[in-house]
Length: 213
Image (cartoon, rainbow, N blue to C red; front, side, top):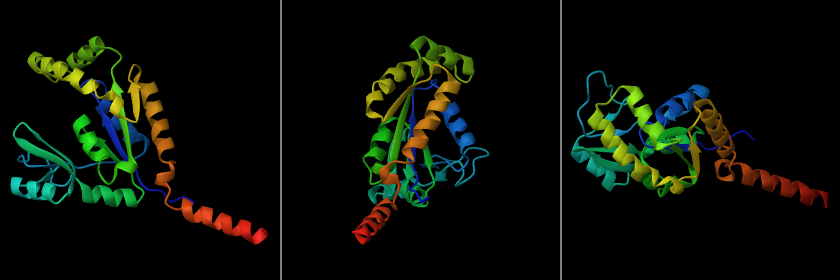
């Protein structure tokens, strides 16, 4: 018995807690794990490729997909809609391929409450301290001080939803956190709901047992 259903892996964290790095390391560990390609109503930026970076939709198309329940989760951010198309994720799950989602707690709730909820593995990444979170944001050198301040203000609201996740990891050591993350994914792949052939196997065992009586 080798067949299994894929996992819908959700990683969430406040900015600076290490989510992007852990996502990259998880995919380096297992290259069969794919990122969910989001849909958006914003215009493509230079170098962005349709179907690779985003699925670029008109607002009418996006709202129609939402109305027809074709989005696993969606949100309105800074004047544009973003969401996760359901069909490609469903196809991957049935084919035994894991799909990785980098979404916030609101998106995570929507996905967990969807039809694919039983195949969802949700993991929240916590920083070791608020001081260290601020240090990491400054060390990235990507944001101006006012942007870092806004990210820090938002971080507590995000952290307050930690208990809504299946697993919570404190990222105090990146290598150790990666090892724990791998262990969680490996174990989740063996959950009963991920093994569609188990029922048939147990029925065969029962038939063999009856034959021996």
